[in-house]
Image (cartoon, rainbow, N blue to C red; front, top):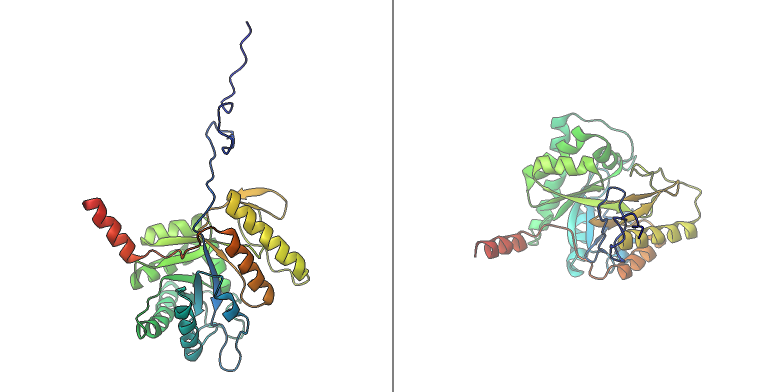
Length: 292
């Protein structure tokens, strides 16, 4: 009797995908993803009227610390709102560029960048400490956000400054190897983020904003990306190729009504959403249980 050639994937389970390298590519749907948004980016009489409506749907917020946007009263107001909604609080740090909202290109030396990071963390920490709260994570904004996934020197400088402030804080940035390497070298946790309202290249980087894009199409595309990401761990890129993405948190925009609806849809997709921060008490209890 003629024997059939052996197929290494013939005994795989239905939920497992065949791998070209002979390994089984298994993905388990994410149940505990974080949902984050930027808040407190107004100042004085210029305030964002949309952000408060996001609070029922997100699990973490990133508060502007007075450099690219924000002011002490705005920061204090947002902190109170977050506490009332039991939301994890993080710092949103960016370049001192209010006119450009932190989006314009700036290049600082290592010591100046380190001081800028610590200065902004200190401002938010003081307001939180007065209410018995802590900074749980840090996210960069604007051009500094881009530098964090394209420039390992910048990423390591920011990560080390965060580590100097507290090794319990998670550094959030675009999912990728630059962020992972910088956080590993600084001995802090990386929070890998995907911005579902943005389109991606196949190398995992973000495409620039498209000013003329239809708002309805933007919302539908973002919801589809979120659903695919949560269910399969993959993203469909601009050229229709698919890439595997490491993800801990999904970022939603906070400057328009569509961001609120998007956050509501994503919240319904995640079975058990939870903040991404490394809780010191949970880690302490885990270490005690191991010793016992």
